[in-house]
Image 1 (cartoon, helix red, strand yellow):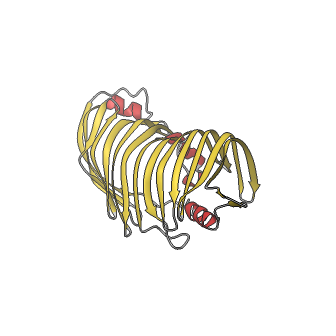
Image 2: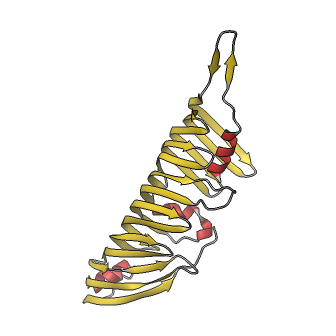
Image 3: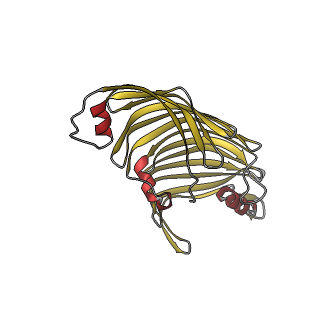
Length: 278
């Protein structure tokens, strides 16, 4: 909805001209440099602040606008959600029917994001675009989920990094990603460090090459599938190797239990994720 609003606004903007007796001055680029910004609204309740904000809008070609945004300090405060950016570097091309994200680089309390891509602008607000192509490198800090109370997140620590691509063509998603998580825990239960590959194919996601360090042992898997409809069903198999029982109990926040043994096992994984109303 944001790019549709911007596109409509810019679409109504005429190129400024200053006519004189012997010449015409055409302004094709306008903006602000290192601006101090402090804007607050009550309805909706949101505040935007920056000590250094640079924004330019350029009419690069017929019916095409280029928007660039740069900042080394930007804060967005919206209810429980608070974003603090130490770097914003965005470059976007807009036409009546498409948007191209040449560069989207941010460092913030969410993590680090580097995204490029393009897509068609839907004819009606709220509709999904017909096609989207994205490439990304992101590192998300998991404690940031606490700022979304509707998710009812547990006490979570660690980070998740992912690099890959995502395509949407005629309502069908395709994509692949290399994912790594580090020092993850949920409600004091240690998840550990690990990696896997993810591939989105139509209405499901396939998780492969699972390799996780947990409790002093390892957890591996060749394939887990997650459906993208209904309650998001998942199914697959995991193999537990060389897992000492004291290490498992420690990961599950159970201490001082005098047991010692090594676990080797294969287990079926089956269940579902419930959809969350944001």
